Amino acid sequence: MPDGLRNVSAKDVNRKSTIYVLDSTALIAGQTDFSKKEFATTPSVLSEVMHDESVKNIVEVAVDSGQLEVSSPSETSIKEVEEVATSTGDRVRLSRTDLDVLALALEKSRAGLDVVVISDDYSIQNLARRMAIKTIGMIHPGIRKQVTWITYCPMCRSEYGVSSLSVCTKCGAELKRRPVK
Image (cartoon, rainbow, N blue to C red):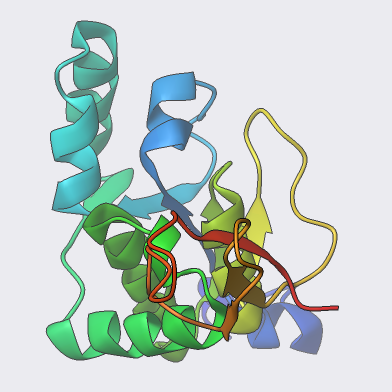
């Protein structure tokens, strides 16, 4: 029997590898131990954090040593995440970088990996859960439940449901959002 197959149970063979997909907060918080896990992020995340010299040094070492993979998700995956974000009302709160992080997590999940997104952004956590992807917060606890948001006008009380509008079409006031009950 080859050495690599000794003492391997069926449980170990079927276990998926876990990869942690990092957003900007995870890198800025600096509490990521690259030596113990596999990590991935996007070029857009790196462009947000590389101005900080201490983060830059840590990231460069992690990338050079192969402990942090940097890759761009496909436009197809990004569009799919945008559709889910629109359906939950989270789209207005997500940047292109946020969409990239979620799209990368979606691709890794579809590749058969057990994916955990590390982010303190509640919109990212909400969408990840909607896509059956686990999340962990760095500083703040994670969300307790999934939410679908509706937009409404605090002035004239008009409701727009799940919408990407930012201004009331009736009175011109800035719209707010609240969870669907």
